[in-house]
Image (cartoon, rainbow over all chains, first blue to last red; front, top):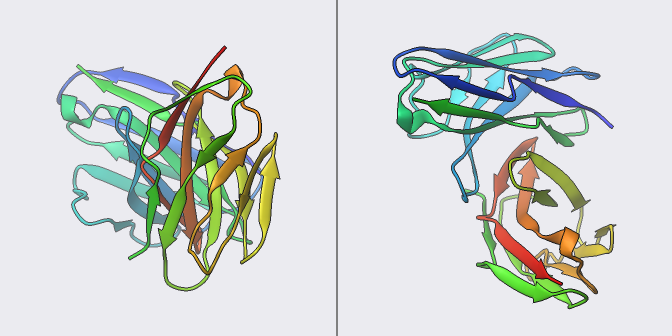
Length: 114
Length: 110
């Protein structure tokens, strides 16, 4: 089946710095990718839809200036957490649907902001 | 908007017991329905899916049937094992975007 990768799998950064997380579809092209956030022992919440060639669409309550999304190519989307703070610590998961809308999830990136 | 309501947990069972985790949904149109499993510290793994009414998804002894009339997609397994201990998420998907239930933590004791 299709594979979606994320890098890094975990990252620790200091408060005030920015962190970039990559999401790649390894064997299919994805004009759309989705970014989710998961707090400990909670469900996944959709943060934004990444669109190749156009601006990302953010869900209500998600700060677009805090979470910058760039869909650089048909196989790569990046999420940059800018000026990270401890409350941004979370598990971030991306997904990409193939042409049949079957969705494939990345393994997730655990971000810890100290 | 779309929503998924999942049976509250946690659920604790003895090995070989019967499992049911209830899931109901609200959606416009005809979404695909999914069950995902998440082990501690890991990402989501697709457990099973159904793409239209009356479809039954099955995998590793787990089953769920897409019931349009009751807008439900309950997960069942006849005999759980300790290795089934994990968090289970019910989800629906329309045009690739997924909406998740809150998750149900299952613990199976030997």
